[in-house]
Length: 492
Image 1 (cartoon, rainbow, N blue to C red):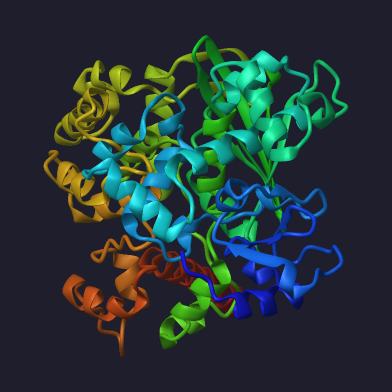
Image 2: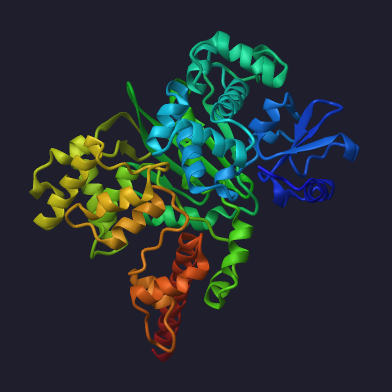
């Protein structure tokens, strides 16, 4: 990937944190690489080199700075102008596609040759797919060592290494320090705690409010700053806690769940959309007058889904009913088909039903019209068989076609699931009534075709525009209700 050294140097020399995640800087005199905003003394400009990713810097022999910790910087090249193919590949690598698989297998999932995939990575990231995966494993292993007392063998397994010996060699190469020197002082019974920083600025309250309105009783709990939920383990279940503040999210999980931590880190990052460059997205969208008004209160992020199948079931249950009614229907489904926790935790009592459990239910057990019940069972069979993949990294076009082929699934549901389950930043359910109401001119609401025409200027972040307009619409609706109540009290 070509970087302009002069521009990068100006951003780094002014310690502009808005460029965190866009590049890293290696210092040839020390062998260390840093991120923009590092508090260390500025090096001489003649001694610096710029890289598009941490993996590229490490591939040239640089090790991460211990002050600014560039390996923990939020944001990935997937959000910074890389091609859709590379973005999908990075999502699959985050999910461990190269922990046990090959580049050829990854390329096949993307519908291309491994040679072409390597060329795209070299061009856009300055590193190979294996180098990116190796960097991911090394930095996750370091964080596990710092925040848990798990044995080296368990840490190696959780980070994607085949043995503790290979992990030890890799950490020594990247950090120039043995695993024992990276160990934090953590008691043996302490939970796993990892800090997931957000690209600034980060406002967690709107996402928490969105999740709270849709939280499934028994499966999820949301408070002012916390999201808790049940998650399945190979040998049972656990509870994950995500605490959000203005700098990011803290993930807390039981120590016995170390092997599942990589996937949970990825899912937590997506739920809170931590990698989004919210300031740049808002600046682009604010060029539209209606969106400028909607964004006047701050930036916007798209709430992701912890599990794609779960949000798809909820979306089908919510057709033609309110958000609260859909939540009630989903809670009944959880009680009937979900697996109870061995030990309930503060109101969390069940795992969400698996596709097999949903497919096995009789139609009358769903509490919805028979046609919708059959649609839910068809969805479960499609996901369970692998015919439909509802996770980031899946081909959005193929997923949309597969969704529309299912009974009871229309364009709104398909596009909504692309946005929340697949994390597609440009997804837009153009037929959404709240969206059309927010875009009305002199009382006339546009139809879906007119919405799409106007939304061309919002690309490639139409999903963010939708969330901004939803938020603005809900605020104005609430204000109207409060004003109406106030008038009634006054007249009384």
